[in-house]
Length: 135
Image (tube, rainbow, N blue to C red; front, side):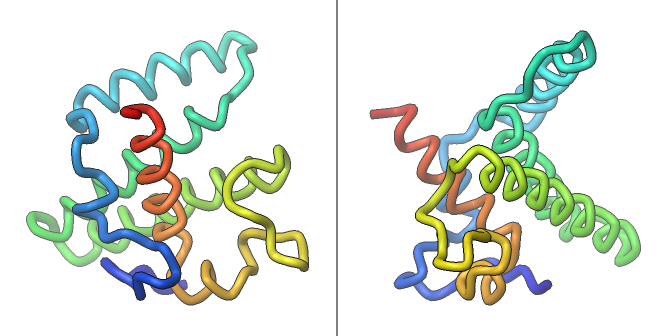
């Protein structure tokens, strides 16, 4: 699966810079995700917000590693980001959240997601979520 920094605008996938503009700092997000994970560990239910913010956080960390880490570390971070994106997609498929479903019923196998990459889905969803939070 490829992950591009940007995809055609008509598909609706923002660049990482646009998707994460105004996002809380990485450390603040680590704290939030960790606190939520602790609640889950005590039997809590994972919300879409948890999966979305976790996937966006891991994506942001992977993007930052490109500038400062070895190729092996960059690849490991990209794999972790893709795995976190799949967790969000699976949640959305189970819960019926996220964008309109393709006819086949799977977000993961829609042409747009296959073409843009799972991480592009996270950026698209985070962009929409953050805009809704600020309106």
